[in-house]
Image (cartoon, rainbow, N blue to C red):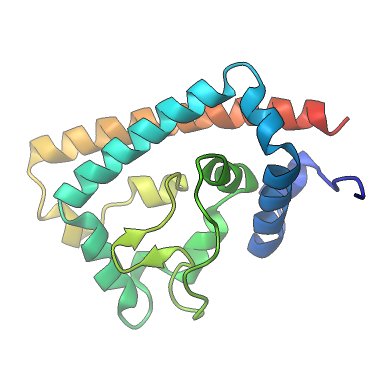
Length: 176
């Protein structure tokens, strides 16, 4: 098997499909080694639990279905095709390590590749996707619900960043 053409910069730059392919190759080659490194598996479990909890909160507020309906409109809404490009290679790798398949659901040039009938298929998402609440979503939230959502989103993003740092260091070490 030829050596993995890995660079930290390639996980962040370039074309979305190149980052997707690199994240998948890193997962195939180093996934087991990454999960065996100290702290990574536990950080991934904690992050997945937080992401699933936030996803449940968002679903309870009707956000996934609302976003999917909006994304299906002409123009794609905020879940437009450009949003897939906001995923860096480490976010994609985190999704793979958590057992998510990364086959795009659609490639219609309008909607995000990962937007399905119930919302986003990704467990770990870019910051924009977690922080943006359009007026259509905001008007359905009480101030208390909005505050809880913001706190939970902030915690998730902190944990996601922590895991990304662990993966960054581990991939750098494995690529030497």
